[in-house]
Image (cartoon, each protein chain N blue to C red):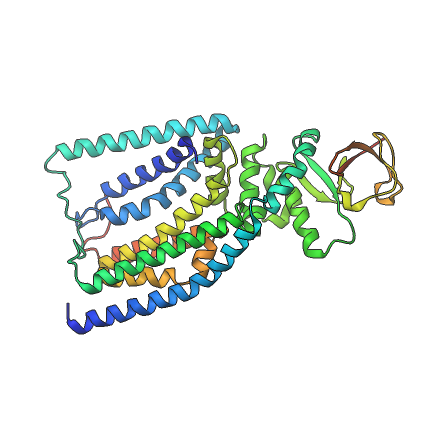
Amino acid sequence: MPLLFRIRMILAAAFLIWAGLSSGIRPMLADWRSWAASGTEPDLIDREDRRYAALAASLPTEGVVGYLPPGRWPAVDEVRRFYLAQYALTPRIITIGTAAEFVIVVPEVSPDGGDNSGATVDDPRLAGFVLFRHFSNGIRVFRRFG
Amino acid sequence: MTAGSTLALLLPALAAYLVLRQLRSGSTAPFSRVLAAAVAPGLGVGFASCAYFLLLLLVRNQHTAVRLDAGLWIMATGSLLARQFLQSRNPEQADDGIEGDAGGRPAWHPALIITAVGVLLLLAVAAAAFWLHWSLNPHGEWDAWAIWNLRARSLLTGADWAAPFSPAIAWSHPDYPLLLPLTVARLWAYAGSEGTMVPAVVAALFSLSSVAVVVISVGRLRGWPAGFLSGMALLIARTHVFQSSCQCADQPIGFFILVAIVFVTMSRGATGPGPSC
C-alpha cells in the first residue's frame, strides 16, 4: 500500500474519530444527566401500565372500549395519554367517545356524581351510562344501560 | 432476555448462516464467512418472522404457534448442520477455507490499526449512548410503543391476532409491515413475558449488523482500512445511534436495503453469477 494512501487513511480516520466523538459525546452526557436525575423512578409508560393494570382485569378481554379525555389537557399530552391507554389495554381497541358499551373516564374528567356502582353522572356525554367500577387511583369505568 | 428467547434469536440466525455458507455462486466461490455472520442475524429474524406469521395464520393460537416454531427451527438448523457435517467429510465438496474474495486476511499496518481502533472506539461510544437512551426510554420512543410494540403486544396477548389491524386504530398504522412486531411478539412469546429488553436487543442487532455489513462488504471490495472508515462514517451519524435506541423500524428496513445493495454489488463482481446449492 503506497505511503501517501496510508497517510490519507490515517488522516481520514482521525477526522472521523473527532467527528464521531464531538457528535456523540454531548447528547450522551445529556442523557446521562437525565438518567442520573430520574433515579429509580419508573418511566411514563410503566406508570401508565400500572395505572391501567387493575382496570384491565375488569374490562372485557377484547373488543372496543370508549375513552373520555378531559377537555383541559394540552393537545399533545391528550394524544399521548390516549395512545398510552391503548398501549396499556391492548388487545382491546380504545376509541375516543362514548359509542362503546364500556367507557373509561380518567380522573381528570371528574364528572359530578357517579361515586357508587350503578350511579349516573351529570356529564351530558355520559347520559345513558352508569358507573361500573371506580378504582382507587381515580379511574372510573361506565357501562351503557338499557 | 431468557434462554428461550435467546435461542429463538440464535437458531434462525444459525440456519441463515448455514444456508448462506452452502450457497455457491456460478464461480463456485463459497459465501464469505464474515459477511455471512454479519448478514445472518438480520436474515434469520426476517425468515423467522415470516414463518411465525404463517404459523399464526395456520393455527390461530399463540402457544401452538410457538411450539411449532421451535420445532421448525430446531429441525431446520439440525438438518443444515448435518448437511454441513456430511459435506465436510466429503473432500470434493468440502470448503477449502478460502473466502473466495480479494479481501482475505488483512496485513496489519498503521493505517489498518488506526482505522480498526477508530471503529471500535466509535462503537463503544454508540453502545454507551444506546444503553443510556434505552435506560431513559425502555419502551422506546413514541413510534416504537404507539406503533411497533403496540402491535407486538396485540399479537402476543390477543386471542384474535387480527384485532390489531382494526381500522378503529388507524392512527397506529395497521398497514405497516409486520417484520418488527412479529419478531418482538415471537421473542416475547418464547420469553413468557413482555420484557423491554427484547425490542432493545432486536434494535441493537439490526444496528450492529448494519455496521458490520458496511465494514465487511467495503473491506472485501476496497480493502480493510476503507471498510473500517466506512463503518466509522456510519457511526458518526448521531441519527444512526438515536434511531437504534428508538426501537423503530428505520434500522431494520435500512439493514435490508443495505444487504440488497451488497448482494447486487457482489453479484456484479462474480465471474459466473447464479446461485445454486
